[in-house]
Image (cartoon, rainbow, N blue to C red):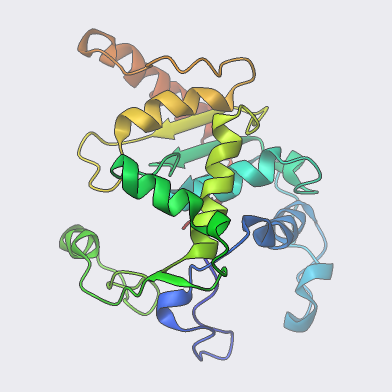
Length: 247
């Protein structure tokens, strides 16, 4: 999402709107700048001139790690025609619980997917948010993180954000989010937010010619093979530099 804290340490945007992108293409410039930075051997320039310099070395291999909505951002960056200028610098992707589909009742899904078509403005708030988040409470039981950087309240939801999510998800389902690079997709059977069957089924669409809608869920007998595949994939990716994209 957008930076919540500026380089001066002051809040950059209102907490509950930090994630509120209405068009995921707005991230492309930042992703381009980051990849250019990682591939440029020039020394780090003064702070006010970051986009013209590099990190002091040119990283040979870069893996993009993306979680939840960040997977939609990364997938759109990697595949949209006229999209990311530096996407060729990414050698592979790791998607952790990608937000491939709304995990809602059919009538709720229809509402969020079509709200922007009803003429409502992008900044119209569908859900004010601000209440306690059971998801964040569960996260804090396991991990320690600052509420300043990751809000522990439920976030607001706007028509524009629903539109951006729906457009990216539609690209995937139409077979238009083909990465052309290796990708590892991770999910958990105990996912409290997303449908793991949707994640498994729709991840196949990332590969050209594989938009077949078949169920690719793993049977118990195949678990060892999958474990070995994941282990070998991480071995291959070890030592590569990771570009993170989060929701």
